[in-house]
Amino acid sequence: MKLERHAKIIELIHESEIETQEELVERLNQAGFGVTQATVSRDIRELKLTKIAGTNGKSHYEITSTPKDNLSKKYSRVLKDGLVSMDMAQNILVIKTVPGMAMGVAAALDELKFKEIVGSIAGDDTIMCAVKNADQTLLVMEKLRKVLEDLG
Image (tube, rainbow, N blue to C red; front, side, top):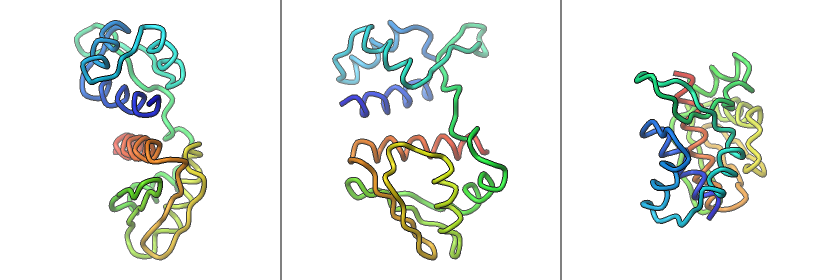
């Protein structure tokens, strides 16, 4: 439940500029998560969310410590250029790449050090990542989408 909630928080702060913990509590409750402000406060710490100034002059929550910061230039390029698609089968994340790029993309994934990924196997154009559970697979997919979005 916690991982689903974390994934929902990430989704919510990407969709709109959430300005307060109270607003985040309200949005999560509307989405079916029965949370208190204390729970959301812990989630904010765990997700390393920070308030930054928005375009309207008001501050809102953002993820400031992105996994992208952990990638060297070469791995960023390999990840951006090599990854084609992602799909999940329970706790297995299947990543399709450009032919011949699976090993490089798998190395870039290793460099991201996502704690949810137990291990990866790469072929020519497919990577299979064993993730701890199905909920965390969804979280890894969201985190990877965010990294790719940040890479432009």
